[in-house]
Image (cartoon, rainbow, N blue to C red; front, top):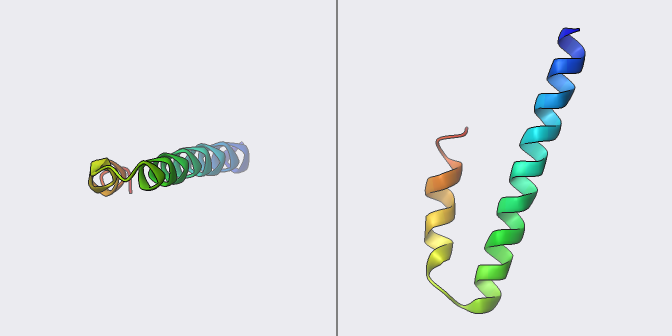
Length: 46
């Protein structure tokens, strides 16, 4: 039971991380300053 919860949590973190990386990559290609807001959104989750 605990193992499956751990796997789900790991998958959720991976999905969040991949979305943030994609969001950052899109902002870098746009050349906007929104990239600076990404670490401030990500750090409280950790």
